[in-house]
Amino acid sequence: MKKGLILMLILFALSFVAGCGSTNAPQDINSPEHTGVIKDNNQQKDASKSEETAAYPLEVTDFRGNSVKLAKEPQRVISLSPNITEIIYALGKGDTLVGRTAFCDYPEDAEDAIVVGDFIEWNFETILSLEPDVVFASSLNTEENENKLMELGINTVFLTQIESFESTYEIIDLVGKVLNAQDRADEIINEMKKTVSEVQKAAEGKEKPSVYYVVGYGEYGDYTATGETFISSMIGMAGGNNIAADITGWVYSLEKLIEKDPDIIICPEYAKEAFLQTNGYKELTAVKEGRIYAIDENLIVRQGPRLAEGLRALYEIFHSESISD
Image (tube, rainbow, N blue to C red; front, side, top):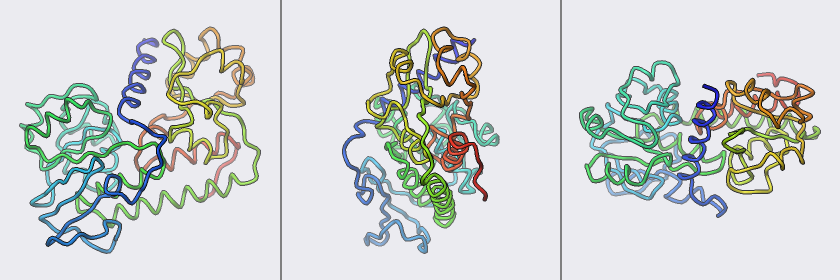
């Protein structure tokens, strides 16, 4: 059972990597690929203006540069990524969700929607039967599946996962535009920015512990969030030093881990006990001195409204103190 859980985590991480593409190039957050654009009466408007209410018919440009035209406000929505599902509910549009992946497990109400597949395999017959007004797809999907959606003529908005914390705001913003929930999207983004500011201010001047984030370990190999990931950025924002910040990819090694011997180890909640009992890790100082901390990984790996909550949780682990609301 433990091996199965570990393998599932690693497979998820590898799927995550395959969809992210190059992360070293500088990102222009104002480019059409990263910021949704609304077209109304053939006049292009800055999609960041929160005071404007989306009007239908609506045309938006998704993160892939594709133009998507919506005749009316979507009432039947399919989400093909857990972070998008969380955003839909946070926007108050959960009643529109008719389809989801098997991994879309938050909030609990999301489980009422029909499962249409996972990150690798989709049931296109089920997707068609749900008659969606729009499908939200992320980079955690295969190109073959994405092409099939396009061939079927389904309105599909691609929300490509970019390796930056700030790109989460862009994802929320575009989903808000498509679902006519721009005001609520702005509220969520502002709330997140407030939390980020509080965390970064609290971390200023504090000693930075060295940190290792566990993605996978044991007989299947060691995997972590390296310097090109937004998870690594979060570690820095929360006042920690990621020991894997100087490499790229996700593959690490036990030898490097032992050599750098981090002050703190962060791992998924369900993996902590197994990690402690796996040969090779028991001699780490953080393990010996009880500085291995379990965290809900969904607060860290999903680019959605709870990411700021994950940042706060990291800060509290690193500095053994809470931030007052």
